[in-house]
Image (cartoon, rainbow, N blue to C red; front, top):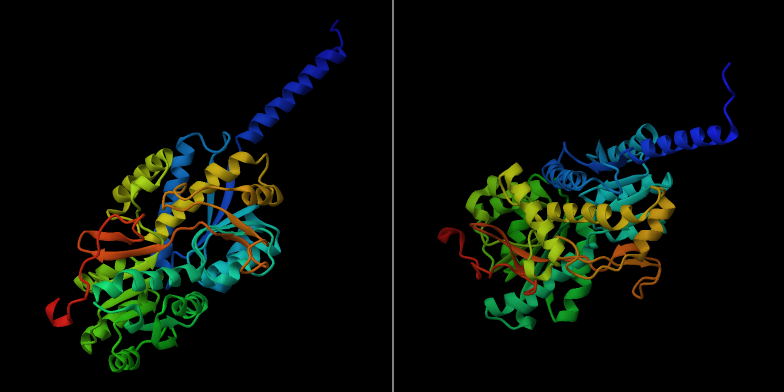
Amino acid sequence: MRTAPTLSALALAAAALLGHAGAVHAQEPIKIGVLLPVTGPFAKNGIENWEAMQIARDMINERGGVNGRKVEFVHGDATNPNAAISETERLISRDGVKITTGSFASPIAIAVSQAAERQGVFHWETTGAAEIITRRGFKYTFQVGAAARRYGEAAVDFSAEVLSQRLGKSVGDLRVALLWENRAFGKSVGDGVRAYAPTKGIKLVYDEGYDQFTTDMTPIVQKLKDVKPDVVIAISFPNDAVLFQRKAKELDFNVGAFIGVSAGYSNPDLRDSIGDMVNGIYVADFPPRVNPNVLTAEVRKVADEFYKRYQDKLKRAPAGHAAAGFSAVWTLFTEVLPKAKTVEPAELREIALKLDLPLGSMVNGSGVKFTNNDWAPDPKDFGQNLRASVGVWQWQKDGNNQVFPKSLATHDTIMTPMPSWSQR
């Protein structure tokens, strides 16, 4: 006759079952929804970000994951704002994600963060830059990359501190033209340049927006020829950047220095589209690679591994926005998620707000310190990273090389003044 189990035996069995369930739960992956365009007009840049972020995921999983849990990406093809909203909602409702990231372009980032906030989901924005992203009273959106005005400020600082000397002009005599695509990113950067330039003594001799989907740059290039600027600061996306450069060559529009602002001018495929015409163009952007001396020892090792893997996989160096995408999600994996007991947005929010990482803590030279309705210039701002690095790099024969500021620079400037088209 079998003896009935004692209470202590039952308790031990229950504890064993609970322990087993806990172990199973601990091994469940951390699902993260990644909203990036891999088709459509933003695909080239979106794919590069996607590749960089997958490298970060693979690296963290090979190290054992986050607190023993692997990271799993669930991708949504956010080709435009409407698709971004529907894809975000799909990942939240179908896949149960409580964390989203992406999104490359500002219009997409605005839409993704809006959909995520509506569902109470934590959104970790890697490169979307429009100022409005952190100024809508949202609780769970964190803009890890630099806000748009910072790109414009970098272009203005570079013009005042470097280009004026290279072009042999005083800052006050420097003729600067501003050209911007008239959507979220272009407007935000344009507003930043317009507000900041006078503080540096720079006068804008031309200031005009245009539709990024225009098919004819002739009127714009002709106007610029008539104005005769020393420097052009242009905010463009891939297709319009290519159209502009081809039309500038066709109409023989020459300028002492040309600064593209991220997006179209940072795309590695620009060289494939216009060949050696790209050499000499400056880009105000996330640094593609910084002087390793500004990085902490541990981050330097991570950077070396990332750049090697990226080169091996894509056979070229990453653009600044791809390095920023890697940097942002690596920080999520190593500085936010390990400190959390759950993946609940409220807990992640509190951890993110406590981050206080100095410059050089991220692969692209950035640090992390988010606004929390405590930033003097705009007390309504929440979730903007005030320590995101932005500078200027230049298209050179051997790649995209950081030239400004000096602390981040890996190379010196070349081809300034820019040779005329007939001499290139």
